[in-house]
Image 1 (cartoon, chains in turn cyan, red):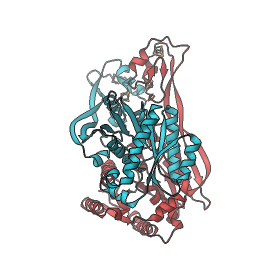
Image 2 (cartoon, rainbow over the protein chains, first blue to last red):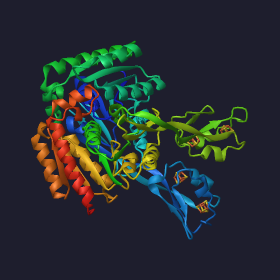
Image 3 (cartoon, each protein chain N blue to C red):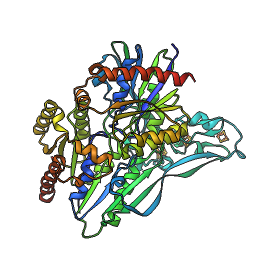
Image 4 (cartoon, rainbow over the protein chains, first blue to last red):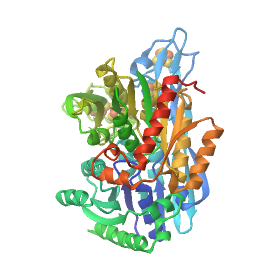
Length: 282
Length: 291
Ligand code: SF4
Ligand code: SF4
Ligand code: SF4
Ligand code: SF4
């Protein structure tokens, strides 16, 4: 099978994005689950993969060679992120503000800046039975996980099986990097007014990027129509509804997959995989 | 003015429910919704917008086609792969300026981009809410959080005893911006393996800030075993568990009807949050020794 990339996202955390991703990955036999929620990757809690490989992701930060530095201040002027400050006797680098853009290296007239590698997180690869597994984890206090997402994107470029991407929550820059190049975005939402509000933000983003999308209503029940009306208006297909049950919340809390505790949900996910592929073919 | 920041590690733990309920319980306060990516507070409080300021969060490179001699230097230099075919992809451009500095014919400019709004609203009963709207796909949310807090300070007056900050989910830079300078952080967690993991992550993320933290376990009865683990962890780390909130269907009902939980004053969850506030208030008023 050729690679298809399906990204699961939600305007906000906690709507069931991880639930949908892990259950979907497991329902597709022989798929690759990718956890791009690098600030808080939780997919492994549900899939329990055997980790086979772990690597560190590094970014480049400047180091000032004080023998060569004349304290001319050109680098400080060039840095637009306030990561460099001139003290009386030296240039101070604030690592966590540095975007690794390279401007200071390029602008130093005296070649006084050297590139230093700094680890910002890790990427793990493994296997959870029939599902291949990748996740990224950002170290505490690091500003951005985007370099990790870029590395992950390279890893999944030429995979010949369905790739299910569990995106970061929200609608900012990391989400763009994680859903880029998807064949389909599945937006998970809850039928509440907040849910709709966050859903709308996610819809706008996916639209801007021109990726086909579909919706899954989680915790479905009373009030679904606010999402359905919106979807109808926007021409978004509602692929599945996952009912709201206390039993599911309990299963989630124990790190269990819904498709393993409930036949109805298992059916819902089986249909979801077929419908999702159908949408992509079109 | 005492500042309480409410954090959760991750969205969906009931942070907004706790925040909105607290907002109806606490008098003399001002609310700052720092969840700039998905602000929900004002949706439930339904405040009327008084002021809306543009927020310029980012610079983006723009190439002047008429001047560009297509030398390709900028494309080679840009470390964010933001330039191809002499065009800048604004999503990828970080606004670092390198291309502008190096372009031999000065064909590149950085322009400020509007990436959101800071909004000040007032509810019918005169409560003040400050929140932000970050445009989808925009970045720089840490800066916007700082702006929201600045605005909240600006519109507060002597009557406002408390500033309640509904923080950003996650553990990144905006979270730190939500917690900096607060007197106390309330972490809302839920008894799930992921909730527990997220709580630990957020605790270590804010550790260096020397802001004391307390914890509240939402829906604690969903998994009493994990709840106990959380409590045990907190005890071992000298963190007070200020409240345990039952799994209460009323919360779902209130959410669906766009009401605050205070519309159901007899509900268990409301009562529990009320009691929790009394404890938090005591801690805030006493002042806490940070670890
Ligand atoms: S530009 Fe180079 S020489 Fe000048 S202050 Fe910076 S590091 Fe030193
Ligand atoms: S690499 Fe860029 S962001 Fe980092 S210090 Fe140099 S100029 Fe500043
Ligand atoms: S460096 Fe300047 S002249 Fe060269 S391709 Fe870029 S914009 Fe054009
Ligand atoms: S400003 Fe920096 S990130 Fe943007 S296009 Fe130029 S070099 Fe690339």
